[in-house]
Length: 108
Image (cartoon, rainbow, N blue to C red; front, side, top):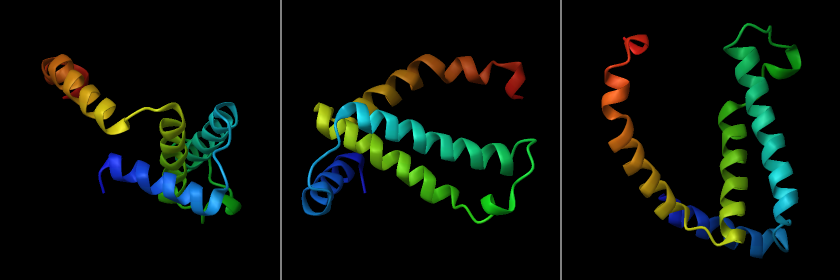
């Protein structure tokens, strides 16, 4: 599914199951919370912190999907065409960073 269709799917879900979008500030707080859950898994599973028993069954994919869902909500409610924005950003990064990363000795 492309980003444009994902935005439509989220909008349809909100209309059918969610009553309405939370306001932008609430969704920003929600996004921060979801990113924190991703950070906790990454820090404990891949970083130097030991993983608590209660964290061992956490699904990183599910938490990343929560982040994507809230980002799509924010894009919808603020009128951002995320597909266009993403395509533009990827093009910019490709032009700007291709040689920079290939010539970075830290990445070899």
